[in-house]
Image (cartoon, rainbow, N blue to C red; front, side, top):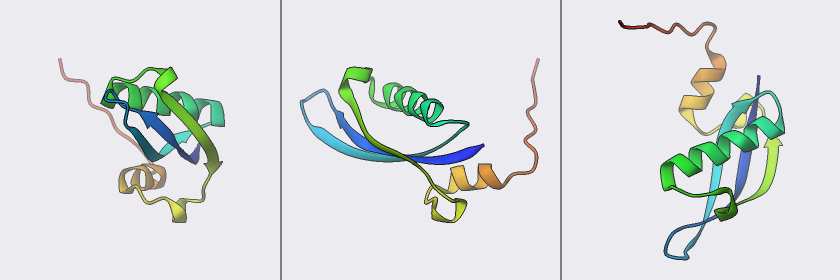
Length: 84
C-alpha cells in the first residue's frame, strides 16, 4: 500500500471555501481520491460537487504528518476482534 497526500478545497454549507490536506492509504490515486470523497462527505455532509481536488501525490512515510496514518503504515499486523 502507498501513502498519498490529497489537497484541494471544499465548499461548506454557508458558501465558505476551505482548503484541506489529507493523508490516506491506498493502492492507487483513484482509490485515494475515493477515500477522500468518503471522508469529507461523512465529516461535513458534502457531495462530490462540493469537493475540488487540486493535487494527489505519493509521499514517503517520513513526510506524513498524520500520526494515525504513519502508525498504520508501520504496523506489521492488524488484529480485529469480533464481539458477539
